[in-house]
Length: 591
Image (cartoon, rainbow, N blue to C red; front, side, top):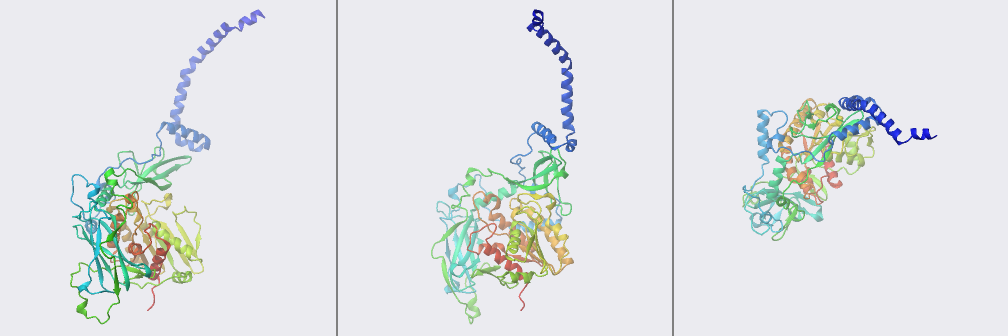
């Protein structure tokens, strides 16, 4: 017993432990080499792990993720501030295209104040509270009559009450009679000296009221112009890449700094429209599965610049009249001598709006006569046997949603598409009506779009047979506001060419183009979706489709002339008038 206790005592344990440790130490270096080799092997051959079970791959991928940096940066790296880098990506324009581009840019050129070494302080910028307008006397001092034009002279002042001496302010004007449900858009002429003329046609009898609004001061417009040219990355996008159980997300855009990391080039082979994503670290470019809006860049302005964008101060604020803001319009004299119609004061321009509201209904001026489609049966009869294709942004989708909800015979076919993204389809098999909507290709600020559904409008138009029973509706504008205008010109040029090809092979095809519309603005929205960006794009769209056999829905004037607040997606009453406008083209009244 004593001997046994001594053999199991502390000294004997130390001797035995030392022997074991000596034996293990011989293999330590071998274990380390094997472990390191295994890790290197896994990292170099991780793609082969896709055949393993989900739990194993997930564990290994988490281990690899701890070695590499995160794949989901909150914001993209800053873009190289090169004016031409973003606008002239893609195919080099031909001499004819370059000439047209120069003409279009000159047609929307905006007056700029004289350059200064330092920005103007807020007190020297345009202030709607100190500005005013006055209605000028009628022709020859006589009463106002239907068929005349009314002019209001706007005097812009700064926050110190001093008159402005240069132009460039962004003003809106409308003439309206609330009790009649009537309204018409006015045209604003910039005299480039702090004075502006707001000109209106007089189209109905009774009391009419002038309304003038400052959207942005000339100083704010200069900031917006700089952002458009230098910061096309202020809305950024992302795509998810996936292969088996591995997935990565990278940033995408039409313009990406090439110095950050390798790019995946998704330039469309048919149109040449460019689009890029940063290449995933582990996956190939052909594993992209979707596209989504990533977010909005912040901190774009200096402290002084941010003062130019204040709600209730200098963003969409009414300018008051120095006297009366209304006049009484008398009926037109049928037997009035022709010489009396001539104006004593030379008029710089004759205003020709596309239409006006009266009793809440839009009345088009020129072209096809408008009529109301107040019940679903009238719409069904109009669209009987028709196929209607709607391409574009959410303002086109809004028309699909209106028709689908208003016409009970239309049944939406469940394509399992993401909500508010599409594509969507509705069918009335009894009356042989097919209604389809598809969003345009990137840039598109939707939540998530499957990569295979990212299709360019020009390519879609090239795939249509067309014909007298085909209606095509286009609305492409809202998602191009953050890019140089050259980007929008290139996109419309491709769409226009496809429209011409479609009309050549199927002359009976009816094509409707929707213009931009006004929307609600605040300090943040102004930097991405300002009405100033929209009015510039709208000018390009009208010029590029002028002279083609297409019909225009003037959403700009339809939202400006209406009394309801501006919204990116106009309220149902305005949408109803837009649909009536389209259907009046599809089914014109027989004389």
